[in-house]
Amino acid sequence: MVFDLSKKLQDYQKIIGTRLVNFETVAECLLISLIVKGHVLLEGPPGVAKTVLAKTFASLVDAKFKRVQFTPDLLPTDIVGTVIYDPSSSKFRTRPGPIFTNILLADEINRASPKTQAALLEAMEERQVTIEGETYKLEEPFMVIATENPVEQEGTYPLPEAQLDRFLFKIKIDYPNRQDEVRILQTKFGGSWSARIPKIFYRTDIASAEKALSAVTVSDNIMNFVSDMIGNLRENPSIVWGPSPRASISSVNVGKVLAMLSKRDFVVPGDIIKHCRFILGHRIGLGPEYELEGMTKSDIIEKSLGQVDTV
Image 1 (spheres, rainbow, N blue to C red):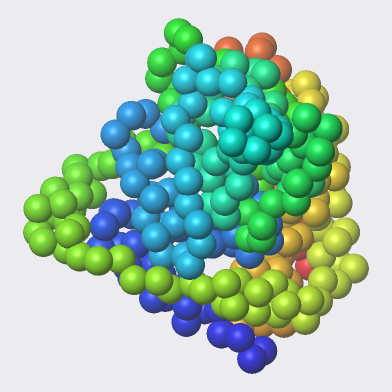
Image 2 (image 1 turned 180 degrees about the horizontal axis):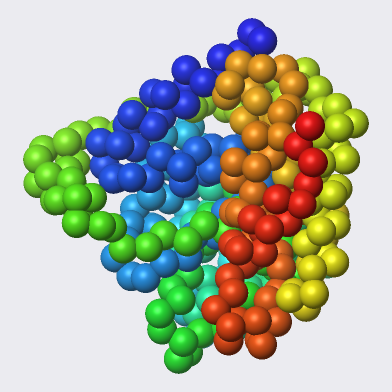
């Protein structure tokens, strides 16, 4: 392949490492999502650098970035925009909202009402918004990075399954261990934190990566592997709803990027498996009786993978 995505990833993760500790996997997922036109939901308690990660990622990409702090009183028009009357011209004009950007950070998305959350649905899937009956295309690239806090339940609105399904990845960020906490302090107070963040990915790089994806082949064996993996999850008696076909498509798209990062022009089962827990975990619903027994979604995904022939 002409375009070397793996070299770009090394430079990108090196800079991420100067500001954030043990975020290599999450950073890789953000980059994959940008290339395949996906979106990422970051879940974790306050203070674990979810917002810092999103802002650092946006700084590394040559793209417009906007942040919206989601609150209970936020309205859909505060995101997509509205039509206002302009006295100077005696005409109505459209005032675009912050969604007209390349990378949108929806901070604490679960604090806004379901009506406001739904304002993102059209943009995330169709990459367009409708304002007062008029449809406007969003500029490419377009990506939503959302954060949510699972600790505080009062005043929050869980995302519905339809919206969760529109996120390519849902990644949980937990508290660091002791060793990583020491490294965080060293990074924060060691001088590297204040260093300027250079651009690593330009729009031409993103376009080149998207074009290179078409050269990555997906065999029938891989398609059967993905289909069996998803099918096993849907048939699992411990879940009440399973992943949609969008999960299958997402798994293949992510696998193709991982093949590129390994400098291969074909997908292998390991490419599908590597980040599957981030792709599938939010797309299955665990029955309450199984949750009481201590079963987790990760357990179910691992069991499903164990039942699929990787040859």
